[in-house]
Image (cartoon, rainbow, N blue to C red; front, side, top):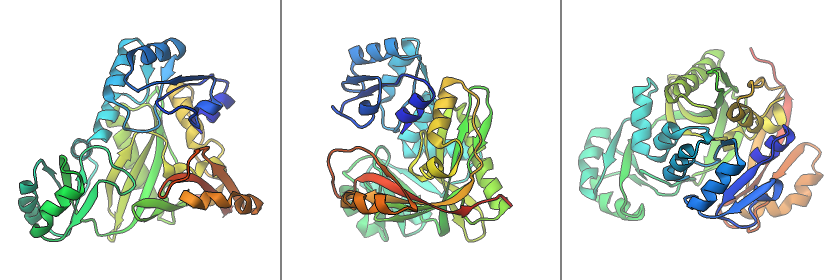
Length: 341
């Protein structure tokens, strides 16, 4: 979707991917199939590209460092990538920037868990510090005796233990920052998960103007602290007292912002390309409320029925293999006009 947005703005896109016949490469001008840290591939990408971006946060930092060394602009920069790749570093950065999170503790060995659980309270969530998504690499702990089993279940890797957040709902903000420092944020969305996977997003969220403004303020605070260029996803917990805690950040376009492709004049994908290329940012005001439903695994095989629904905007991602738990596409339905107020 980033490649499609860039092409529509007149850019030729080059894709570096370890996956032959990738969905992005099939809609791009150039394809380089190689490991992300392949020196020759990165040199070729540097020859082709004036600016490089990435669409997931587990790109090796070494690849970005090499591109920067070759004189290529990379957006977002290394600071955002480093923060998002390590959950302890991420929460430490957020707190230092003035964005509140749940209490947490770094876990380097199973014996670290019991004292951390005593401090944070039970239940608490053990997560791998690096990688892991859609609920993978996580285990709840309700008492000290479960520590070693939980450690084994996440693969015995360095971890973070997070205090439980007693939240009313999860919100997210999709925001962008341009090279000139200007910030543009879309209204918050409300997100619903099942089995650790995002299932449904309603946008804009049914929150007060004060909560919406605070969510967007927090996003702007994070963007400024990172000296960020591009689109970022900021996931938030709204507590019963309306306070907002940051759950995590994603230095990229984000699943909870896919609704913008059908309900906004300029969607998150075009906005990201605009920012990375140094263009002015576009408007973020929605013209409609929207419901976005992820299509997981075989749900996408009902594409014919979904395409026949006049109220549905169907997006399929071009992934060749259907697998349980894999996001294969999404459907957006517009729910009527929306006016801020």
